[in-house]
Structures are given as C-alpha cells and as structure tokens.
Image 1 (cartoon, rainbow, N blue to C red):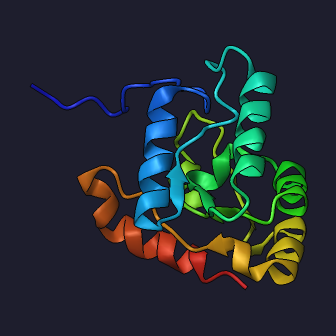
Image 2 (tube, rainbow, N blue to C red):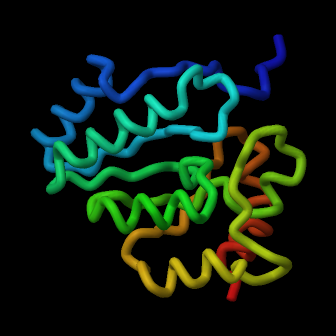
Length: 158
C-alpha cells in the first residue's frame, strides 16, 4: 500500500489542553516550545481566534521561547508584527524556498526572489538575526536526495 503524500491535518487551538500539556513539559525541561501552525491553511475555521489565542500564549509566557516551523506560513508583514510585539517568538525557515514549494498546493512562504532573499525578508533578518534559524522540513525520504542539496543552496542565498 502506498504511503499518502500528505500528513493528516489536525487543528488544535492554543488553549487546548494538549497544547497546555506540551507547554508545561517544555517549561519543566527548560525547552522552547516548537509549534507547527499553518496560518494560511484554509481549514482553520477562525484564524482571528487562532492568532489571538496564540498571541495570548506568547504574552502569558514571555520568558518561554516559542518557535514556529515553516515560518508559520505567515506573510512578511505578519512576521514583523509578531517579532515587534513578542520578544519570545522565533521562526524556522523550513519550507520557505522555491525548490520545495514549486509543486506544493499549500501556502508556504517563499523568502527568495531569484537567487537572493527578497528585500523585505532580508531587511527583517538583518535587523532581527536572532529570530530566524535556517531549517529544513525533510518529511519524506525523497527530500533527503539531491533536492536537499538544492534547498541548502537556496538557504545560502545572499
């Protein structure tokens, strides 16, 4: 039987007990809380509520680093607003290059323009270098092929 090419979607709001349990464990272990939120997903029934609850979580735990995978699928202006409002938010650049998103049907962020970072992303990364980490989301085996090398090259964009 062939493996599906998509992961099962689950929508869990930040106030859900499962998130609170994960946060409590992160606090006990002195770890950042790494979260996978796809803010551009059309399946989130109430994006405004979701963002409000997420920001309340950030505000309630200002000493705890929160890390969004895949740039949270947020536009650059949303990322800048979060960075300016919350000193404890960080972003992983996974799934934010044109190689991986070229065939995707999801709202991944493309931080590049040609072979270089786009002007807005470059400005943010230069101004807030400690808020971004180069990352890859190599979920499926084929992502560990030559595709990985191509994506790493994009990650070294000027």
